[in-house]
Length: 173
Image 1 (cartoon, rainbow, N blue to C red):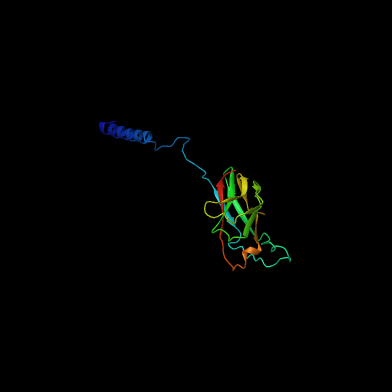
Image 2 (image 1 turned 60 degrees about the vertical axis):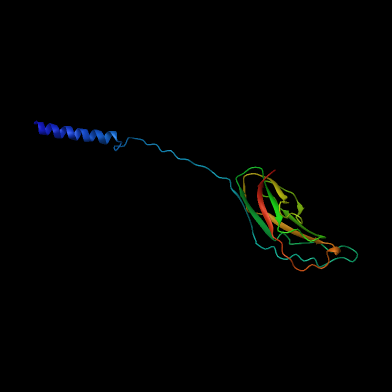
């Protein structure tokens, strides 16, 4: 072996050493690190954007007009991964004097309904509780919403008017 061959072999060995030390030749295992998270999920939706029109139009002589309801024509679906949640209702504008708008929400599989709740003056920051004690649930079956309208004779004749009811998932009992 001459000096030239020794130089070639030395250069080749040095190159192989650099490849091995740089990690280009893989071992029998490798590791990776990943981060993960599950964010708060609080979703509610209603089956129909419009409930329809509730019309108070009958009474028994000598008694106040008959209350009407929508027969539970709408429902809601809910998904939350939180604990201790509640569903509240607000109305876009208070109802006129001598008229009562109430709402009853059937509780999902986890939670308790507050029953028939007067939402007539639940505008702005005056939200009322409909369902409480909701914890980690995904439910879209049988969660009916029933609206009730009651007007006494002092309400007079009221032309068809619209109100928007907003359901919200909030922290609470």
